[in-house]
Length: 54
Image (cartoon, rainbow, N blue to C red; front, side, top):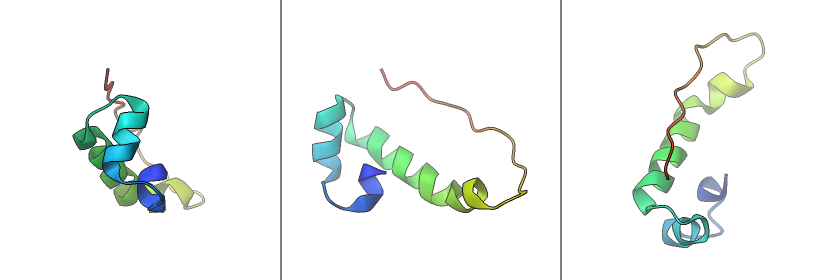
């Protein structure tokens, strides 16, 4: 959510959470791609694979 809010840069978010900026960007892209699926009532989707970043 921080990545799409625009309050911090990807670099700042990555530093705060001790991850690489690539991971922050991938998470942002996944959220933006799937956000409508998450918030559409009655929409059934298969669960996403969770990636461990550490």
